[in-house]
Image (cartoon, rainbow, N blue to C red; front, top):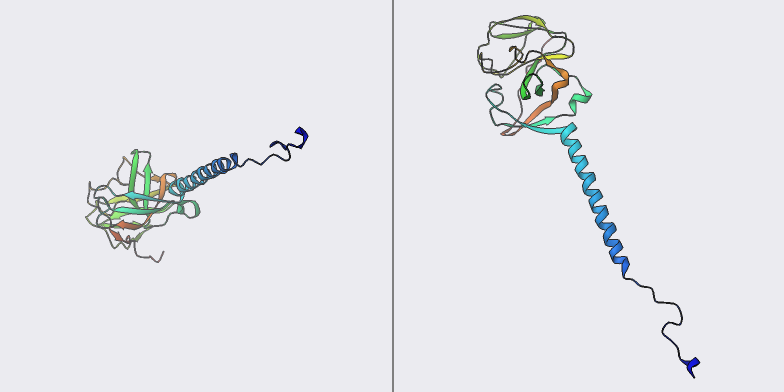
Length: 198
C-alpha cells in the first residue's frame, strides 16, 4: 500500500522565486551608482573645461564690473579661438598665485602704449566706452608671442594690478582660464571696446 502514497518530493521541484528580487535590487542599485558617477564626471568636466563662474574682487574693473559681481565664464572658448581685443579674461596668474579678472587690450605681436589717457594699439587709439581714471603714460612696448597685455577698466594709478605692473607684466596665454561673457549678479552684459578700422 505504501507504493500508492504520493510524496511531496515526487515530480518537478517548485521553482523558488526568493533570490530574484534581491538580485534585481542589487543590479538596480549598481546601475544607479553608475549613472550617478557618470553624471558627476560630466558635471566635473563641464565645470573644469567648458563653463564656470567667477566672482569679482576689488575695484580694478570698475565701472564695467564691481566687487562681488558674479560672472558666467566661457572656458571652452580657449580651446577653439584665440583671445580678442576687449575680451574680459579670467586669468590664473602664476606670478601672483591667484585668479584675476582683466581686459585684454594687446595681442601677441601688437604694440601697446598709453598717452594722454588713451590706450594705443599699433598706433591706433582704442575706442573704449567703459573705463575710468586717468592712467599714467606708458612707453610703447611690443607684446611677445604667447602673451597678452591686460588692463583693468579702472585706469587710476594704483587701482589695478595689471600688465603695467612689474608684479604681473605680460600674461601667458596658457594662464587664461576662460572669458567672462555675462554678469549673472547683477544681471547684465559686459561692455567691450568699439570696433576699430585696423
